[in-house]
Length: 232
Image (cartoon, rainbow, N blue to C red; front, side, top):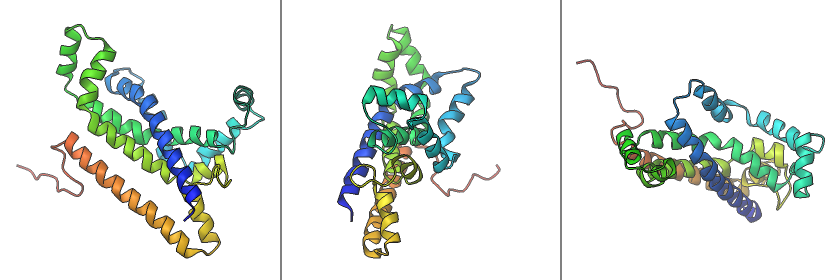
């Protein structure tokens, strides 16, 4: 197994998850509490990576971060390096690509908080931030943790966006999914099997944890495959 690719994948997934928690929680709280008429447009934009081919998203990121674009030149002037085919560009693309995998569980968890408790907090003079930290966050931490874990695992298995934005630079942008592709191309099936088995085990473990946490957040929700109640 390519240990350098494993280390880089874990670092990318960890930093992406931290960024999604910091950026995604305020966005999720706004979506959960907002009654804005055009909120569905924001929800559609957040969920776009779920249906957009990763190569399309990667192409636009590569175009936006390249030296010929205004944004790319501005970022290069500010940071002193090009973000295209770099770990920084890879991190930025991963945050956007994994955004719905974190925000959607966050929104579901925050929406499940009893609104009467929130209103009581407001009546006691608490600010929105204080109410979020003292009421909403403690009551929805299971769902938030599930979203963070799901985002971590999703980032760990990225391929299309990683390949388009970061390329295949050993030690800088070569992740486990890219290493697996290279191992298969080189007919190194033993190494490929170890890499694939690791990704498979992580994916299964993450889904098991997410489903367990969701059952604690929504105890009345039927499990997968449960039969719908018949007519009375």
